[in-house]
Amino acid sequence: MTTPGDVGPKDTLYIGLMSGTSADGIDAALLAIGEASIRLIAHHSFAFDAVLQREIHALCEPGANEIERAGAMDTRLGELFAETANALLRNCDLPPSRIRAIGSHGQTIRHRPPGNTPSPFSWQIGDANIIAARSGITTVADFRRRDIAVGGQGAPLVPAFHAAVFAHPHINRGIINIGGIGNISWLTPAGETLGFDTGPGNALMDGWILRHQSLAYDADGQWSASAAHSPELLAQLLEHPYLSLPIPKSTGREDFHLNWLDQQLQGFSSLTPAQVQATLARFTVESIARHIQRCPNSELGGELYICGGGAHNTHLVTSLAARLPAFEVMTTAELGIDPDWVEAAAFAWLAHRRLEGLPGNLPSATGASKPVPLGAVYPA
Image (cartoon, rainbow, N blue to C red):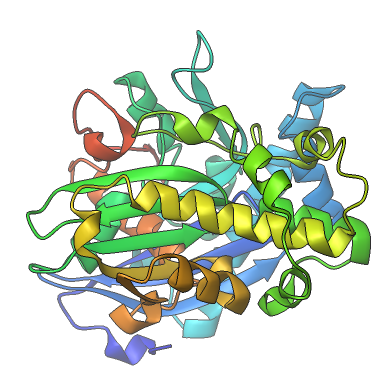
């Protein structure tokens, strides 16, 4: 991590706040955006406890008293997002006046993109009014709905950032974020960028190990590596209709959750929990690999850079490298941004784009009819 001393006189500072589909906490990234540079300066994280995580996950599926629970959680998370931003400022000894804006993704509790509902929407909570009031910093939030308003999926939004900071003039690059859900940004030397969700990332594996071992995640993929996967179960999981949908597309916990997994496991009672975990890991790898092979010129190989929590799952990363031998597989740390902070950095960058009146979406990634500025602005 660099320090605030690396900030130049022409740099403008932004904070990005992110909580993903895993709902395990809030990541905050401090970005310096200059005339020709984008640099991660500092970062901070706040971990959710298990009770809060369960309450958030419960809002991702229909249930009793949803509006009351969602409204209360919106306020509660607004306070936590604000405190995370303030903690980052204290760690850096920076006053709020030094930050031009906060870009807050919020916490997704429901994602219904075009194609699977007559009235598409995407709902992120974490009240931006509270963030602006508690931090004293202009806050940009609600990034996804403008893209949906012009026909897009509202996701993924990070490919525009990936293209700005990670593209190479001569090599195919895939930036693979493995959070609760997996997504890819495919960056070609010709400047073409694709972006889409591949299906499950860590969500099913995390839920399964929590159920059977009371652990939040499978450290280094040790449990999934301890058993052989079931080819029959894997083949059945790969029949999920989302995986064959055309690109661009997006998904979430609404499609890949433990209740769905329990339905798939009927008839597989002979499998041990470890074998199921091994199969879930293989499911994530296979769904990512098959989607990469659908990208233009992927037969030429290239470089794959992993970010998100899955970058720390050694078994997952090595399995993906073995599955795609034409590609060199590494993490985004090789490109200058630690894999844990890429998404938060992206929303700092999207806040910059919004205040400059510049588009934040890529129609090739979201399916929108046109590029548009994203996000609503909440003055301090």
